[in-house]
Amino acid sequence: MEQAHVENSFDFQVGASLERTFPLFGGWGERAWAGEEWSPRFLWPDPPEDVDGEVFAVGEGDDQSVWVNTRFDRAEGRIQYVYVMPGVQAVRIDLVLVETEPESTWVRVSYQRTALEPKACERVLELGRRDREQGPTWSKAIEAFLAD
Image 1 (cartoon, one colour):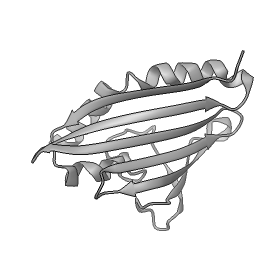
Image 2 (cartoon, one colour):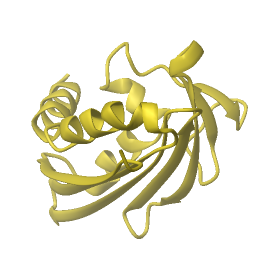
Image 3 (cartoon, helix red, strand yellow):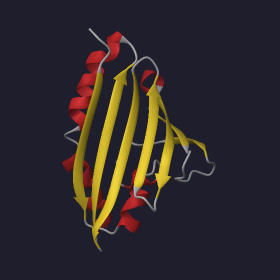
Image 4 (cartoon, helix red, strand yellow):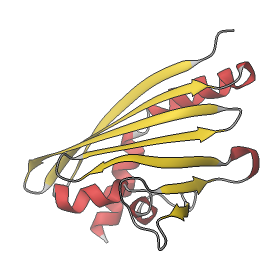
């Protein structure tokens, strides 16, 4: 089997301004709505803060990945992460946020996943299939957080 490479995107609307929505997609800010499974351990900066270049780890053992924020541009509504899970995958995540009305923001999340070893191909393909279905889950969690 060839190395797996998958690309998927999903879109959704958030019922809040870009100013309020944008911080929710930083590695630190996402903790507010993503649930217990999202628990980044910040390596930089210290104390944790969502900034261009932030570095953090997620997961444990064989499932640990190291993330780098390669773009955190509020003015352009753009965020990008690159992370590597050794022996499994390299991933790039691009987010575009556009305020469509004063209290509504359109969000597009795009994933590119590449298997790093042949034995990881099936896992990467499955993660890719799940990526494109995440829009409703993310939207519901963010809206619930914003409603509190």
